[in-house]
Image (tube, rainbow, N blue to C red; front, side, top):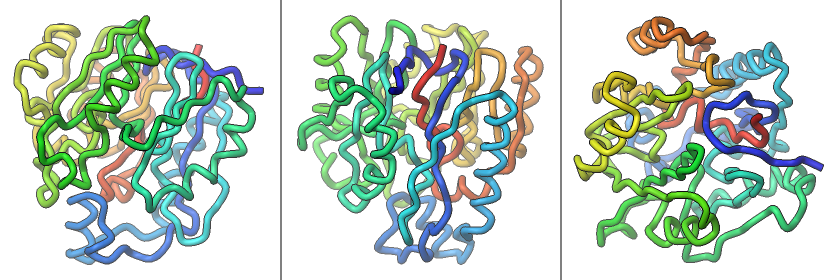
Length: 304
């Protein structure tokens, strides 16, 4: 049996589900695009091809092997995008929460059922239908759970709004010993530079007390300022709109001192090195074209 344990984003990683790009399916039509960045690349004829994405994910698998992390992979589903395993589930403490994802993506959960079957049933939760929540919007940080959401009355009109206020209420009720802090995110169906698809597209804690932040991802400047003050301005790396678009906040921590980052994030990676982090650089720019990066394609199960 797998004894789950995730209390924050940066403790030493022991096991993880890593997405797969095998049999990723044909390039979606414009109507099938889930997010504005994919839409942009479909229109431009630059949507990533399967072979390139398989290679990129394998670079990450090699880094996990280097650090002796146990890696689970989804069972392959023919012609199905299974890269972003963070969307379909997440762990808080010793509980696995199945996400209520877009209906078209239900098959992806079945592909990791063999992993879920290794978890005690009483440690697996599946929220009721009205609760919308995806793992990219849930950031566990010791005594806190940070959740990205969209409070506005037109929530139902946005396919890029993935976590509702019912999702925030559900997590608050299930984890009464934690302080749940929610953030109203900026959404756009058409402009990827104005769209924070998930909280991890504009915020990410790293190390013991540092964070990557993008101000414009938050609809309420006070909520951004709260995070800035929580971590301390001197401990925060503020990314630009272009850096947010390229997913600079969507790096992934193997430990408090080791971070996997995209090789083209030159300004961020230089800062991380200056701060004393070991930066494992990988090519991930093709996968980034689908508005997801390293955190999106990993689902941690056990951290120290």
